[in-house]
Amino acid sequence: MADKLDLEVAVGRYNRLLLDTNLLIHEFKRQANVLAKIPRPQRVTSLVAVWEFVHLQGGQLIAEDERTARRTWVDQQQIRLEWLSPKSEHAFRNLVWRANFPHGVVDCLLAAESMSRRWPLVTRNTKHFDDVPGMYVVPY
Image 1 (cartoon, one colour):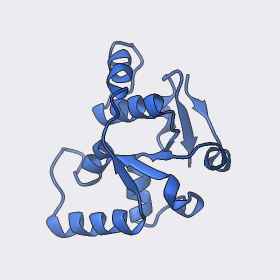
Image 2 (tube, one colour):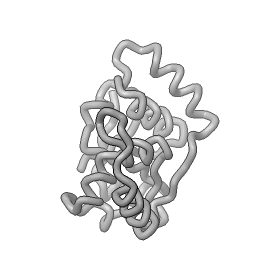
Image 3 (cartoon, one colour):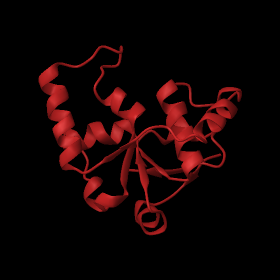
Image 4 (cartoon, helix red, strand yellow):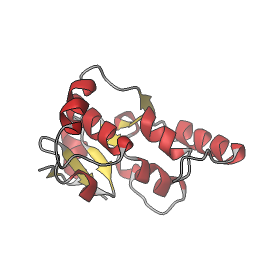
């Protein structure tokens, strides 16, 4: 079972917070005010989350002007992009073989990355990660 952390606690305890795609989307559309509470050096996201950030639900790439606006926004917010860590492969393999793993490939990769780096995942979709033992999630 994933452990839930308060945002303030996570900011005080961890040097990096992994940002889920849904946070990126809500912040970009100004529907949330979470990034203001996370110091810039602690803002990290995975390239798999960025892939999802620039695609529609069916996998179709969003329009070029929208992608450019999103890239500019990510840069302005100083969100560091990280590729998957070598240890995430092991965590991903373990998750895939479990009955209650995150069902979307991006969620599964984010869970593996969060666990392997020991960075809490800031997400709106905590239910996607409820059954992942050893993972920290920060609801917003």
